[in-house]
Image (cartoon, rainbow over all chains, first blue to last red; front, side, top):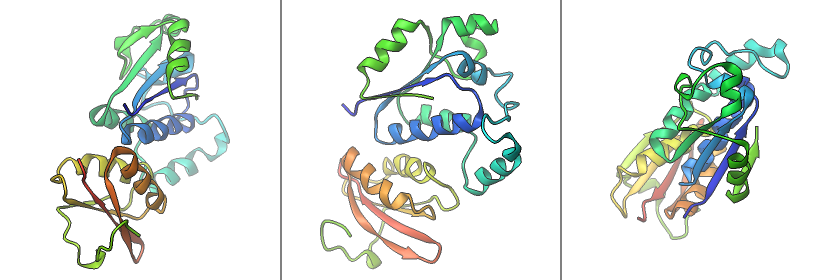
Length: 136
Length: 86
């Protein structure tokens, strides 16, 4: 058993979500299971209709184009492309908070990846049982 | 660099994966994908221009049960060798 990493995503800007993709990659590379739990802004960022339009950074907004260029120079894929790749390479699941889905008036089928819908108790229990649990 | 005396300069890899131009986690994911195409006991060569790979690849190999053999520095990149153990 290589263990499990839980990532709770409450931020929905690409600068934070790059961190999500990098950390998930590190876990999948070494055969850990990864569970991503989407809360309010996580659900928003995973929406199919938002995915590629979502460009505004949470920090240093004035550096947006510089960051975009820098990431290209570093050869980093968009965060969502990396998550798609990780789904092929290992065991990565995505769960959406039921209240957040309701808040955005969407279902899990409106998200580019979502395996199931969960509540707060399940999120906390998942974090409790994982070897690594992080809040993004 | 490796645990045994291996002449890395004359090594014959079973597969080479070129991850130059990508940054962490690109080379590690490329290695994870490629190692399945190497026979058990065979050698994977990873080309990486990201210095983080020099630390990450040995850690990855140890964690998933393969053997890190070492690396050769080339201008602007590294050739990194892993033996598939299982």
